[in-house]
Image (cartoon, rainbow, N blue to C red; front, side, top):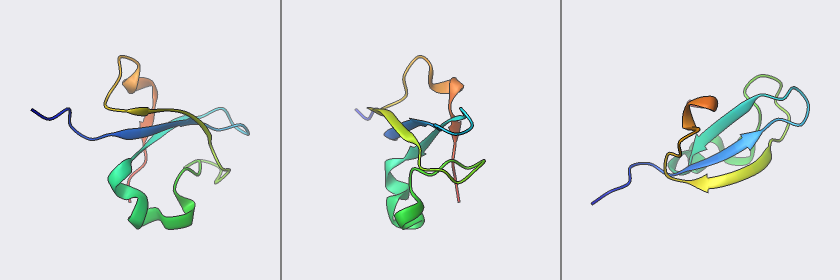
Length: 63
């Protein structure tokens, strides 16, 4: 049984945007992994794991 993709969940300390990155995207984004897709600021890490009940509050960042 699989829980699906795992994510790192963040909130931007500058603009307040909530976003998430799939853990398998680490090699794609490299040092930019965890940066806000809106303002490029390093996000504040909130949690990690499979999709949570509040998952839809976070925009998924993709390449």
